[in-house]
Length: 401
Image 1: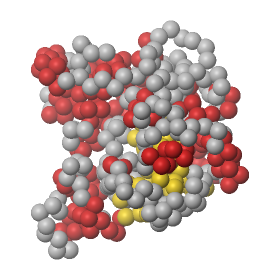
Image 2: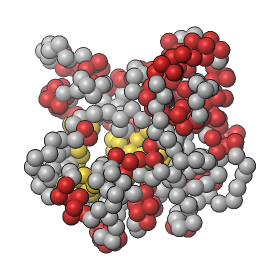
Image 3: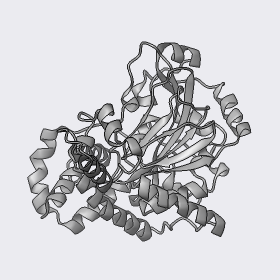
Image 4: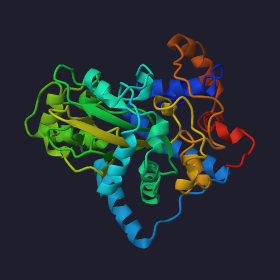
């Protein structure tokens, strides 16, 4: 058995734990898997997802009209080459105003996501005074006009499907304020970092306020979403005379090693800073290096939605469980494939039977059974078990939604 097989099997095959805990373990192990192994396993994971969806009669998304498809293909090419593509305006100014008018009637929670707050809703003025960031719970995000429609638009979903290689799962969506606070330290998201949350995934970002150089623009390092892209940049830098000890590919993968000055020095030609008005959107592979620049003045409202190969449980960050779909399903296309795509946010036959858990089993409990599992499970049994872990709804009786 290859080292890759061993690493992957150690990640997901623990019969003693329930499916939610296995998701938590899979995420935990993703933090330590090598980027090369992550890329290799993503290929097999995509095939497993496609096979499972075919088995349960979930079709691919329908083709776009010819003109829309041509535009989608241009963005897809940019995503594959650069890790990011600028979609341009997706919401009009009147729609932005409608979103803000709705949010003026809602309270916030004092963190970048709800689960890390004290779970007590507060007025925006109080959040702004006490915290550097504030967010809305999922019910208020989906209740806002236009956001659900934007994240599930046929164009966006088809672009995401083509980039990932299979029908995606939305595993998190969030609506977050960032405020300028003179005495606060930059948050983790305001330093260059990678997200290791899925074997392959991407994020739709939409500015909900005007963003310039002083109000927290998003920065992305193009071509750092693949192992080959990072290697090329390092090789180019060393060929130009850079001989520092840190100028090697391993430096640019783990947060403990990342240094903003080093990143900007080595990748200066690949740095993209996005300054655009409210309603502007871009799609990015968040495994590529990125950050939100700390605000110098003002405030910024950012809407994002994350699409991956499977439900990793991160929807718990904005809601303890998927919401009843009755208030939302008539706003969008909600046939079988879309019910699957949205199943971590809206209740459907593909949703988990119980709320997600953030339990992370101890390493000792995991390692106690690791050798037995690795010797016992072959590739086919792994695929079948992984399918049950990643698609628990398929084991439930059919329901009508």
